[in-house]
Length: 396
Image 1: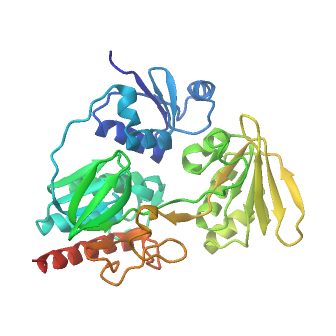
Image 2: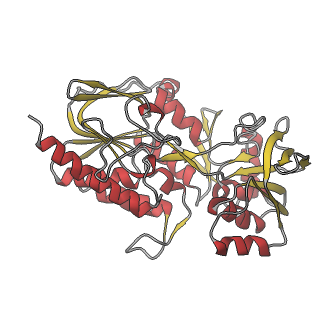
Image 3: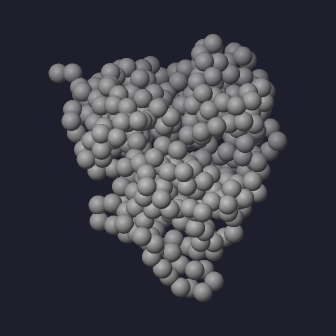
């Protein structure tokens, strides 16, 4: 019996694109229910899934959840079991280079490695990383303005010109040394040997880790204002954050919601032009130096408690949504026992991308590189790949 897969999505939603790309990578057929401008279909999605985030995925009528849920199921092999799929047996192959991650650093490294005729495998949960969730990019040289998903498409197309193997939908959980060989193990228990590794696993969005956040995730607690902001039309919402992402989310929501509380544990730290726009909006009510302490609600968000850091006074804000934009943390947990990191968990590297462990290099936002920019990550990836080539040429 053929599986029926339904995906509720929006045209501009990067996580929707990631979910569809994952399904396509597995050669799965699915139907798209576009809720971009269809309020009736949007209400249907909310009623069926009890969630206010996109995408929402159904398999044979059963709610699977959004992108995070389906990617986790895929990484652990549970999705194949659910669909009744049997993974093909693949022979064990020793690669010259395995790249962990498929963002700008990963793609740049792969392209440079392929041009050096290194057998190369990319392992990633999805294609694009954080770039795929970015709305507009206007500072990438040679492209006056491009969307994040648009840049990801260009990276994929460029990489397709070379003999680069990809293992998408897999999460790496450990790397261990076996002589001069590195063994990369995934959540689905695949073990891939490589002569060298580049860790380009990027970063993920931080969470608040307060009561109610996990319980109400997708039910009013969201992490992407671009994707999910329109679902809070004419409501009162809270945006948590003080930097560019928080200010941008508040400004965006000011054009959608009835009222926006902008809660930050410090003063605003984003670009001055964004601070000026946020300050000029009569729909944005700032709560600087306030810490969120609890999100309230039974089946959906109904309120947020914040605490004045200076006075210790707490108050409850009546909101229907909490949009969390509190920065990024490095995807380095699988390598912490092997390489040196700083207090933030970023991998320490030298100017050539060396981690200090023979044959293991790192590039991009997962490292302690000072500036987190797309163009810098791409440069890091190229430099790491050239360093890998030099390293391999010196091996006996």
